[in-house]
Image 1 (tube, one colour):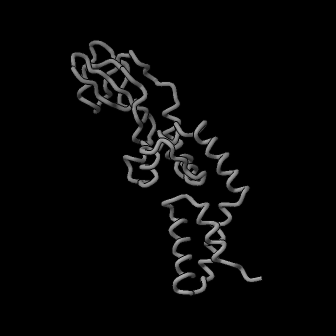
Image 2 (cartoon, one colour; image 1 turned 180 degrees about the vertical axis):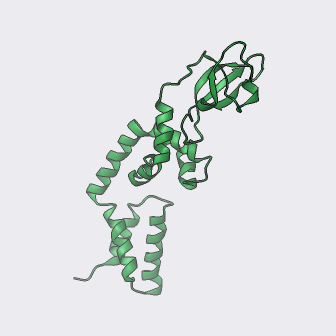
Length: 199
C-alpha cells in the first residue's frame, strides 16, 4: 500500500516544536508535495522517518522522563559546564540556550556530549570538590602569579564560575589585604598566607 506522505507530514507538523529544524523541514516537504507536485527523494523519506521515530508514543514518554530527570538532577551541573564553554566558543548555540532560557531542556544526546566529555568532567569535579582554602582562609599568591596577592588576602567565596579545565581550576574570590575590591583567582595560583614571606 502506497504511503500517504501528505497525511504523515501534516500529522507530524502538529507534533513538532515551533521554530525547530524539524518544523522547517516538514514545511518544506509539505510545500514540495502540494505546490510543485514533486515526489520525495529517498533521502528525504529517510529523514522523515527519523523525525517520525522521535514522535512515537514511546519516544515522547522517554523525552518527558528525561526532561523531569534533567531538571531535577542535572540542570545545575549543565549550567556550570555551559558557563565554562561560554568562554571557549564551543557549543555556542547550545550555551546560549542553557544560560538564557531557564526552561530549556537539552536532548539527552546533547547533554551527554557537553557534560560527559573529559573537559566537562574536570570542570565538574573541581566544582563539586571541597575547596582547599575555605572562605575565611588567608592566602597569598604562588611565585609568578598575581601581584595583587603578593601581600596576601582573605578568601571570601569559593564558588566562582570555572573557566578552565586544568588541575586546580576551582576559582576563588579573594580580597587582598588593604584593598577595596576583591580579585578572582584559581586555586592552583594561591597558597596559605605566611607572615614574613616575600613575593
